[in-house]
Image (tube, rainbow, N blue to C red; front, side):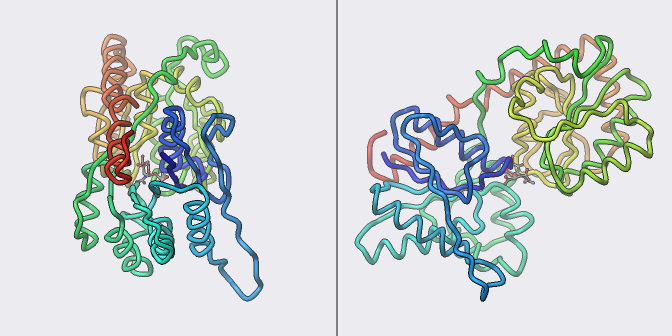
Amino acid sequence: MNIGIVCYPTYGGSGIVATELGMEMAKKGHHVHFISYSLPARLDVTLANITFHQVNIQEYELFHYQPYSLALSTLMVDIAERYGLDVIHVHYAIPHAYAAYIARQILKERNIDLPVITTLHGTDITLVGKHPVYKSAVEFSINQSDVVTTVSESLKEETYKVFNIRKDIKVIPNFIDTDLFSIEGDCVRKFFAESNEKIVIHVSNLRKVKRVPDVIRIFNSIQQKVDSRLVIVGEGPEWQKAQNLIQEFGIEDKVRYVGKVKNLYSILKIADLFLLPSQQESFGLAALEAMAAGVPVISSNAGGIPEVNLDNFSGYVKPIGAVEEMASAAIDLLSNEEKLKQFKENAYRHSLNFSLENILPMYESLYSELSKKEI
Ligand code: GMT
């Protein structure tokens, strides 16, 4: 099959899921065409059957905002014609689903049928998509997609609540390549903490929805009771605010900021606990990655997180903003070696439910149904 995948190239979860999905399909012998404004962060272009197509924007002084959707639709049309795409799968509705609708209409005039799958990832519904400036166009393009999927039950419910959707939405949870996370990373542990110290970790794009100041507050309480260090991975606008709090608490020597990392797996492997106190989270891919590395999670109960992190099993799930509750759950877990060992094992075991082998066939059968081709 010839599959088109449209995604954001950044470190955000939607781009990561799209990239991993495309690379797996390529490994199975399908030709996968990635379309984005720059090379997706985790895309390995040295793999066979993968082509990357960059959306090029022509700058013109008349435009205050360059028309990205137009350039994207045009590129989709070109690629569909040139490579005979069987299906196009867009990740994140804005503006990808809208651009796919236009591309499809153009192709129809040329007697080409291009089925469209739209996967909704979270903020394209819960934060950006429902805003009145986008709502009608987002609702329209979701309804025009041949198949719509969400990454959690919670996001599906939210989509029906926010928009007038006339289609069945299919839930296909996010997945991970569990083999990647099974590598040993203990050798780097000594660069992050003393042997008697526990390592607490947070990985995100440090945006407001992640409640990064809560991460610092929770850790501040933890380090008063448990010898520990905090490792922060990622880049984003809330880092400055977090730094101010770190200084205010006087815990600079206990917090290590590493920015974006290539080898996330090996850093996750050295951690004892993952913090995800988000305001909104349709799924929480970062938590799942931690669990696959055998790291329990203390999280909020936002959106789809409770479908990933099981309360009192793979970690603890507390109300959004309940910093002290999260801190005492963390202290309890980190102070009890037996329990911590059990929760690490539970986290890993539960992550296997979201393995590539379990989830990929769901996408494969969608592609096959829509293109009327055997996979
Ligand atoms: O906000 C982010 O973390 C990035 C965002 C994205 O679209 O890239 O993540 C969303 O999609 C991820 C992959 O499906 C989910 O794991 C995240 O929970 C979701 N983020 C939010 O809903 C805030």
